[in-house]
Image (cartoon, rainbow, N blue to C red; front, side):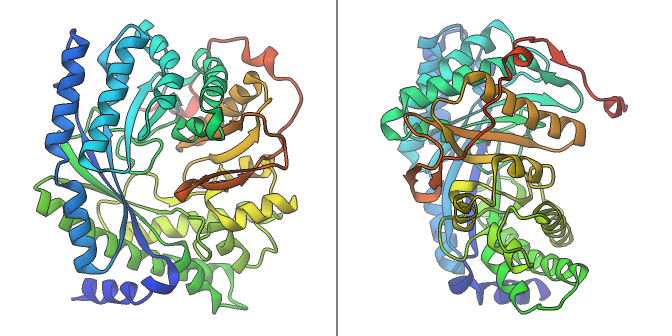
Length: 451
């Protein structure tokens, strides 16, 4: 009965502390849909998604209503579409529109998996796929895209890194009428995981079963409230409180996820316990760091505080469930966290400090608006730095930056909803093009050689 007591304790905190099931994501394998006839394959993609996910939204809403825990987003992830092996823009757009149309037909918020895995090299099909990404993001509503550029086992595909800057800039231009929002739907990874339920980087790994339910739980407000009464506590005492709080949150998420899975008759995959903020007041990861004693997120000590938070969250999750996976830890997306926005506006939180913090957070540089005239090579260099952090430290890292067309440092851009708004952050203006232009592949680090 202990699990139900933990769930009831957690439900008691729902209204005041912004605990929610951030997403229920159905992963769907499309490997049996691909065909040399890409029109036929795109139809098969649409048919399979709409067949498998037809009851996802209805079931998730029913379970959320019955248990009193809101499931905020219902999403779909699919097999990386680059595996379809198309050869040109027209064929890739068939898949992009099939995915977008299927998402609308079943009523999910977002669909991910317009993705490619190029950590060791690009095929000619991958190269044409990368060229198609800006058009796919500009001409669809629900579609998200990702590229895995490196891994600890393979090193970093520097040729692909160099392609990313111009591709992101083109996406920003094609979606300039909406503050370059297309870039908010694209993320570049190192060490991408195959069971991630969070967007924009979710895809259904080729090692996964045919269909699966992955759940993402978030509760920054719950953790913040648990720490507020701990004035004078040591850091290890705070870590223990965070761990115990994460345990309760994980129990609640697992109960909901398994119930959705049971009703849909789809295997339960993983529970991702990631403290993922929203623009709502009190639902902030930065605010947790401030409750710990920092004047502002970004002050010296922020990396240490975030490291402790991320580790304690993971430990609590692992204690509560044998199915913890995805990107569990803490996200630091600037536009989606009202206290991070305030810290950036005050000058306390800089781009370089954010990069340092990504060495210990769940993912990386996330939802950061940068000046629209930032050179493509500089953007590629940002991705190279972040990939290096991930590859050397054997962790997942990612970059989701938005070069807001026509905007300069200090301006504000607004995308609404969970994507929020963001100050345009200043970036280093010195030239990186000589390095990025070298191409090739950064070799795997020495500690990758394990068998």
